[in-house]
Image (cartoon, rainbow over all chains, first blue to last red; front, side, top):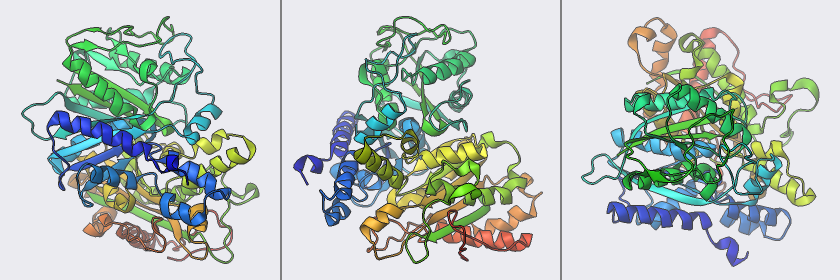
Amino acid sequence: MSGEWGENRALNFALSAARAAMDEAGWSGLHEDDGLILATTTGQYLMWDQAFIGAATGVVRREEFVARFLHQPFGDLARRIRLGLGGSERGFDSVVSTACAAGTQALGMATMWLKRRCRRVLVGGVEVLCPLTVEGFRSLQLLSKNPARPFDRSRGGINLSEGAGFFCLERESKRSFARVSGFGFTSDAYHMTSPHPDGAGSLRAMTRALQSAGLDVNEVDWVHAHGTGSLHNDLAEGRALRSLFAGRSVPVSSTKGRHGHALGASGAIECALIVRAMREGRILGTDGFDEADPEIGLDIAREDGPLDVRYVLKNTLGFGGANAAVVLSC
Amino acid sequence: MLILAGAAVSSQSQGEGSTDGPPKGGDLNPALRKATRNMRFAVECVERALQQASNWLGLDFETIALIVGTNSGELDTSAEFLLTHAKSGLARPLLFQNSLHNSTAGFLSIHFGLRGPIFTISSGERTPGDCVELAHLLMESGQCRAAVVVLVESHKMLAELACPSERLAEGAACLVFGAGVDSELSASSDVKCESEFLSEDITTEYQVRPEFAPLIDITASGFFRAAIDWSRSALQRSGAAVVLRSPDRQDGSHGL
């Protein structure tokens, strides 16, 4: 087994992002009564799938695969993150793996934990590029050869990416950068890899998130959309947003043109961008957006620009019809 | 939070006479032709549970959450995808869409029309407790009024690789939970008597047998036992026979 395979890319991403968040929050480490919620779609598949092929083809000894790689992907990753952050073997850990909605779901779930289970939750998502997802998305003809162009008339698909985003959430905090004010989760029950064409499930998730926040739709200052750049996602999400705002113009952005689509981690990474933008009093633009798709009909923010943002609606859609939305406020 | 229904299916991934592949020909329900073993285990289980809880649940499936807990997830399908690609250069879309941990949850929501929140949780041996707690939190926060929690494990290829001479149970267990609203429940004597099965035991961790670790025996949890108990109780009340079988076996049945 080569040293390269032994490197844990997902763990490194996660620890790096989590430590940055903890430094900013003033957390010295993870305590036993702190919660940890990890969102990921493929976790440590990069190690697992290379090792599996090696074992199946005789390059890697079966005993080595079983001992080191058999079940790398999930619960083990959360445990290693906790240990890497100074925590002990015991603690409240949970791993959410609801495809591309996972990161946003995890934020909502952490909010529920704060009400009942613990006073502090470290929550985030991590994703690594691996042959399974790259070849898989290619087989579905969803990948763009060029940088993604969310909501653009000539959009040609998604760009896969990798990375991590983490948040330190506290039940009560004297210095907070933002608040998770509401969340909503639904399912399309329609198709394994395509959203409902009317965006019906996504609309219900966003509506629930606003209800959960006790917010009227007119109070939303900015929508950070899922906006993958795929034909079907952007159409369905556009229809959902049009129905939600019913003619009201609200700036809508997707930042996947600049950082790609990190699948299960995307919600967490993008919420981190949102919080930073809110603190800086601006909204983020939509890289790659040039010509509006008349079938979408949204007020797409092209460039970064100043705006006094109080409430942001973050929306996500995932394979299997999973929809999740959160309202972030400052 | 009350238990409204429960069901479980289980089989061995190894052993004489095992027919672990999907059934051939037209015997299989067409809706399950593209389903993985996980999906078939889960569908059979959830179908029974939803039937039992149908009086209480009604037809409003937008307010029913679906939580799938799985440790191995669809790693077998991932392995099949990777092997096919390595050997032939072909990346099969169906295998990819079925290879993610969330695939079973997506498939179940489509199969049963469940449009409430869907989650896939994969927290190792803590998965049962995490799923039950999440069901409770979702109901408490008003995201749903009932939750279908399904634990499912199938790991035929990995089990053969890890422990070729041993047996490791696969299968699924399902409990349906409802928010405890007395006025609604009073109309259903079934629900009232079923609440006695809700206990701390269902949230205990999987007991992982060292010789199989990290693969998990689906039957090694209080959640699975509660689902079995509930299923037996419900079937006795309805007068139906207790037959729990592997969804991909044509011949054998497993009495549990």
